[in-house]
Every structure is written in C-alpha cells, then in structure tokens.
Image (cartoon, rainbow, N blue to C red; front, side, top):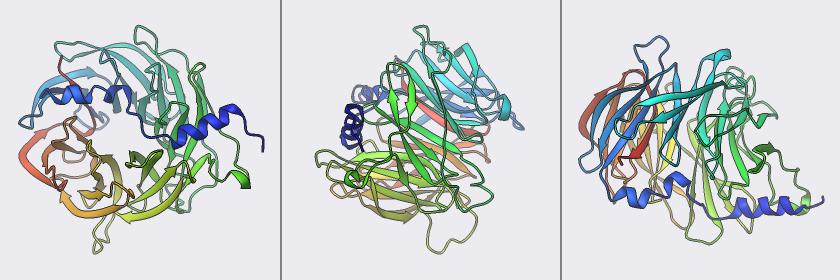
Length: 400
C-alpha cells in the first residue's frame, strides 16, 4: 500500500497526546471564577418545553438559578457554545424536517437570537460539535446515518455544507436498533486532521480524514498487513451499539485512551492508542450492577477534568456509574452507581471546575445537582432539584 504524506500525518495525529478543544483552553482561567451560564437543550414535541433554556450556575455553591427561555426553537436535542462565546449552535431533531440552527448570544442576558437555520441534510440530528479552528460545525444525523460539515461565517451564520458522508459497513445483530447505519456522535481528533464518528448501527467508531482548508471528510485507505497501526475504524463487539465517546490520555508520551459507550449492551470499551501500536480494545466493562437484569439504555459518558474519573449514565436503571481511571494503563475500576433522582438521565454535565455533576432526567423533567468528591469521584446529591421540561443536554459558559 502506498503511504502518502497525508496518511502519515493522520497516523501521527491519531497517536498524538490529546489537545484540548479551543473552548476548553479557557478552562483554567474559567475555573478561577464561579459564575457560569448553563444552556439546556430540550425536546419540545409532546412536551410543554419552548426550546433552549438558560440558567445561572454558581460553581462555588452548586446553585442553579433559572434565567428563562433563551430561544424558542423546535426540539433542540443538542446544543454547543462556540469557542469564542459569541454564538450557540443547535440541532433541531425533527425527522425529515430536521434543521441546524445558529444563534447570536447576548453577553448580558444570555438570550439567543436566531442568525440562520439550514436543513440538516439528514434525519434526526442528535449531536453537534466544532472543529478545532472553530470554522466548522460537525453534525451527526442518527436516523439517516450520515454526518455533515457546515462552515461558519465571520458573522456566525452557517454556510452551505462542505461535506455530507454516509456511514457504510456491516450492520450489527440487533434487528430493531441496528437495521441501518445510525451516526450518533462526532468530534475532531487531537490534531484536527481526523474526525471520529460513533455509529450505533454498525458497531464502529469511524475515523475520517478532515481537510480544514476545504471542510471535507474522506475515509482513509484500508491498512495493509505491514501497517496494522493505521485504522479507519474502531471495531466494537457485535451488538454494542456505540453511542458516545470520551477521550483521555495517560502520562506516557504519545498515548491516549478512548472510551466508547455502548448504548445497547450498557458497556464501556477501552481502546489504547499509542505510537507503538494500533487502536485496539483492551478492556470492556459493564456499567450496571451485576444483579440488574431489566431494560437499560446507556446514554452519556464523560471524563472528569482531572482525568481521574469516568462517568456514564443509565436509562432504565436511572443511575450514574462511577469509575476510577488508572493513570498509567487507562483501565477502569468500578466505584459504584448513584441514582439520578429521576427517570431517563439522557445526559449529564460536569461543571468546568469539576466540583459538580448535573444529571438531566428527561422523563421526570428535572436536573439534579450532585457534589463530586475530589478524592474518590463519588457523587452526593446537594438536595437541589430544578424543574426543566424534557432536558436532554447542557453546555456551560463563563459569565463575562
């Protein structure tokens, strides 16, 4: 197989230590403050929700205070604040009528003004993120199984799509949930040369080339036997149903760990990515108690800012699973399960200071605040429960 310069660059990118998102580069400075805005996306269909809500969050006390409706918009199932803090982007999950929306943010009130709205070019978008330059947004369309790239103009408006790629591969064994490709998560790789896409229907986390000059995506060539390190996908066990991914790193140079949440089998699969070897799984853990045998759909996964703990949410068991991360090996050790105080925790957010976890219980219409033990990662409810109609995602921003 001919190895091109671009391909070599991708190998280096995939084995490089994790580089923080532009929006996370301000975390250290933001941590010194205690006041944040928290934008909450919701489902509006068959609920009394109006769209995106904004709250005041005090990281010193864990208090979450309502500011009201930030934007009246249909089914904003995922929201993301632009790295410059001036704009917010949301996917509007509405079947064949799904859209992607760009908003300008009022720095004083937190209210949002619609800049423009474009068709999602797919059905039921469920995730939106930025490339590391902040010049593009990535959108994962669940039902249609495709991912789309939209450029961001200087005024924050979305431009015509520069890429629209459909995931392809062998379907998983779950005939009800894996009957077709289902893109569920998309984020850029450490160097911005690659993009990771979790596809629930295909039991794969795909790795695409990303051309930042053109905003295009392309599948890397399949590796030959002499180049086992190079991969175009992370393969999961049949029936795993990868939903979301969290990326960590060890103290070793050129090593990072990739944690893939399996929605269908309620697991986390851990991959080791180092310059010496391939992206290979070395651990798979269940995120439920052994005695639990009821219905469950895993929902969200996140690594604590201190890189010592990993959290995953269960819908059915209605809990947050807590794991300790071994800093050298990346292996997970279960530290227990904490009830979320509501039904169907579709998402949770860890505040930028790492002191609190906010669990969003979709079907009980509330957000429950938990204090994080810095030594053990354990969660203790603070007693604060905030009523929110059908909350499904949260994004923090320091108050200016």
